[in-house]
Image 1 (cartoon, helix red, strand yellow):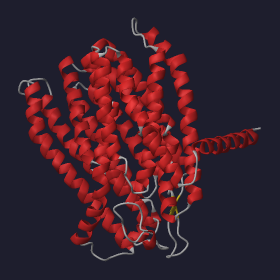
Image 2 (image 1 turned 45 degrees about the horizontal axis):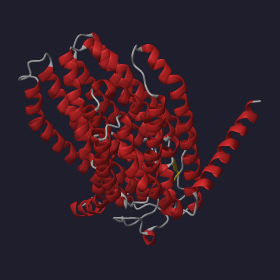
Image 3 (image 1 turned 45 degrees about the vertical axis):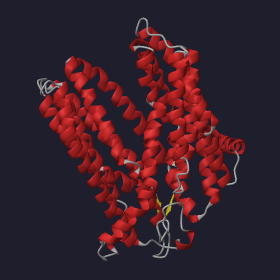
Image 4 (image 1 turned 30 degrees about the vertical axis):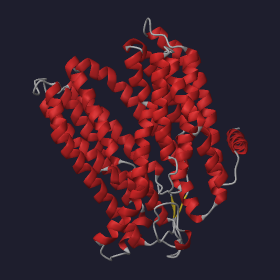
Length: 487
């Protein structure tokens, strides 16, 4: 269960390593999340009226906007938790104060960061509760003509509570990610997603309609919280360390930690907004310039490209905690190894996934629904754009693993340029969907696509070709050994 190497003495530093369970549960979590969302769509369409279904997606949109209030704290706080476990005695606004890194763990500082995390999420949750309870209620009331749609008032009340719980209970996942338990984090989210699906189905069958869907959404956060808390308590070495410190945590200490982590967190939040513009803006522009029919096929292709990315990047994302721990300890060899295996896996799986969609998935979709055709060449263009976009995003995740975020201005500039160019290409020049893709791709190619992979590779004395070559060799040897054992 634990992803932390247990200390042999009180002066030993806890080290994080990626394990098979991390990768497996990351894959399982990704597949379950996508699968349950797809399976819920026909159920909601069947059991809800058109008005209720439209209102449900209004709820989801409001919840998605509320999630932006998290504003980068999850990644930043979990990273600093891991830094403390890796021996850091002083938290830095950027990078790591290597002079403060010593053997052992400062358990009091660890407790301060945990306590600060819970307070941060409580504040974020309460702000979301107030905004959704006030402004959200006014908006929902207006689109339902005063909550005249069946179950609309009751469902919205439940949903407001779930908006708070989904944000506040993020502290549980932050703790698990902070101790390097990638498997535990994904296990909690996966089992909670299955519980949401099961509860929603039962309540829909019971005739609760929209209220059933809202209760299922609330159940997700409660089940996730219960499982994540239980898994965190099973990290015995961490629990022993926490009990070893009985010095009260002061408000001044918490303010100091908050001031330090906020420096990167708010920049990470800005990046989230920019990322939303680089990915979701094309669907909005498509509906504005191309019409709903063409937007439907275009959005399906975007969803397929996103699915390929989510699956292909799973292994590298599983390696992030190990990379962070190796960064704090100055272990360049482990950093290079993690990057080589992760990037090569991303490239190989993404290529195979794209080929599979072009040759299998798109033809099947054309058979399922008459008149639904997807341009294969356009999909390949979308896939290439998403490959480069998500690859530099993964490298930026590695950069922020080093507690730096030099790319947030470039993200904002490229996203703004992309929206403008897409509008010109698609709207004024009439280039259709290709205008959307090229308009977004050109600014990214100009800087982000190459700059941030180069930034990371130079930091760890590695080149992109050598990273791929070394990674492919490692995977080839791994599969060969497995084949030999099976014979």
